[in-house]
Image (tube, rainbow, N blue to C red; front, side):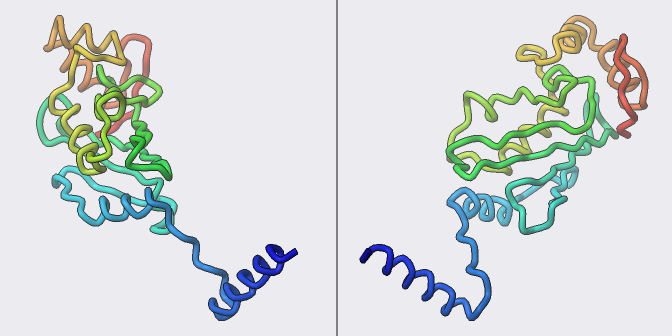
Length: 183
């Protein structure tokens, strides 16, 4: 009975201290770290970040990358980030919303980037991930592919790969797969 009274007293004190307003939700350690990471972002001019659910939902956001060199020059690629409450002890879940012909991004938007998987460490941050994604567009890696067909073409015939990338980004077919325009 004594514990029950103490709980009720604490609840009453919270209501009184909030002046009739709902108590403020306490931020998780992951939210605090993410807020710090976002406030310290140093993005290249070809990258931008947006919060489609508003600034109150920092744990879900989008990053747009517009490469200024390489095979993907002129393209515009959107990625969603879902950040866990235990961030930075778990890497964010990153998906490419733009259907792209790329050896390291499959047709469902899954991204093959080592720092999002086995090489993730809590000292890494959102800025590091964005630069890693940017690097995938300037230096696609055929040695660690998700899209095996694109990786084989990149490895065996870079000119054909470049032609396929251009066709896909312009809104066309590569093999049997249609890619919406992303330029």
